[in-house]
Length: 488
Image 1 (spheres, rainbow, N blue to C red):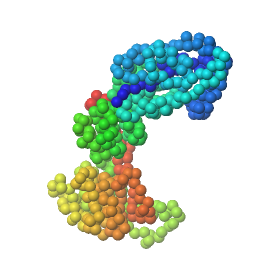
Image 2: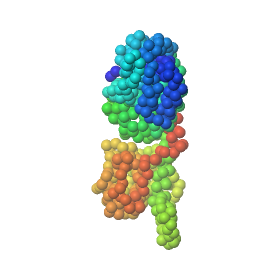
Image 3: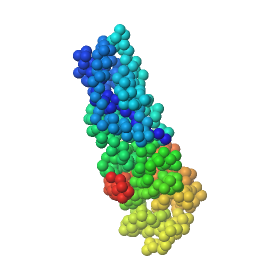
Image 4: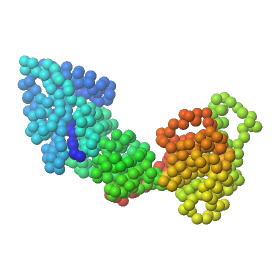
């Protein structure tokens, strides 16, 4: 693993904008600036902007260009920053959309050996064209991956391709579009040096912001996460799978926090072997329990079917639309933990008879503790609330699905693989269950196209904990956990 710092030249390492200064010698500086802003705001593509800007500097003499080079202004703090990087083992690379005519002598003076830039073409001592061969994104791609820490530093939206491939990116100033692409805006190299020493929290884009003074790096995809992990000291995820290979990309990782219930999406064994804490925030129980009750009401009264028919213009007479009461029905709760207990209390308050299966819970005030098979065969509603483990994998399967009481409602808001793939075919295809309600699925994202037309299959895309209140509680807990460990 290497620590690599990619530095833009103009507007970043030096205060000069050599292309604008060259154009000013032809009286075209304002037009160059306009084109640059158009490119940064996305009104024209970068390639077209480069071509037009080059056209505006044709005819400038080599002598005039050399005079501009003599007026180079290194940004304050840059020399000290580069020295610190060199002393701490960083590989320093300058990459510019500008020209090696300026970049090479400046970098030689600063002791930077790796430089990527384009070439000015002179004929008879004057600029006639330029050879454009450098794309910042391609250069960044060359160094990204392989567990490398890749820091990108620039000043504008034309650095976006470089920023997108970096572990963390910084931008000077507030030029058009830059805040949309860089992770952090910095005022100078002195503040930038302090930021490099930060302990970064890497968090999924669907997790609630942690409020840690801006030291949070977001990711949306696995590729995003892979580039972020080399600088991660803490990782916050929701349902994203964190396997051993990902954990191995984060040498400084101290804690993984699941913003949700359970940790079955995390390779806890691989994390523990590295001494990495794995924690969760099981504070969504009321939300999941309420969704479970919603499934019961919907399935017993076919609300979703009636809604769909009325929106198609169909009005059914009352005698055609019959449902079932929940009052007096027996609900069989598989797993009487946080969520299962709330479901039990609500069902009891609604006049339902509560039975349960849970090998870890002794007798309660509810009707009876059953074996799993007994519960399946005597319950009008069966609802699963267990963590995923070797013991609960395929808890409902193709064999015991036949034991389910005919006409029962089966609900799963726990983990998708608690119900085996083939069990769904028995429940619905063979008419054992009157309805199956699933918020969690065997594979996610899930494909139920083969069950098209099954109105008694009621589906939601794993939204049990997706309420404002639950997410706020979990986010607060995440922040508290991080604060206790020195983040923030």
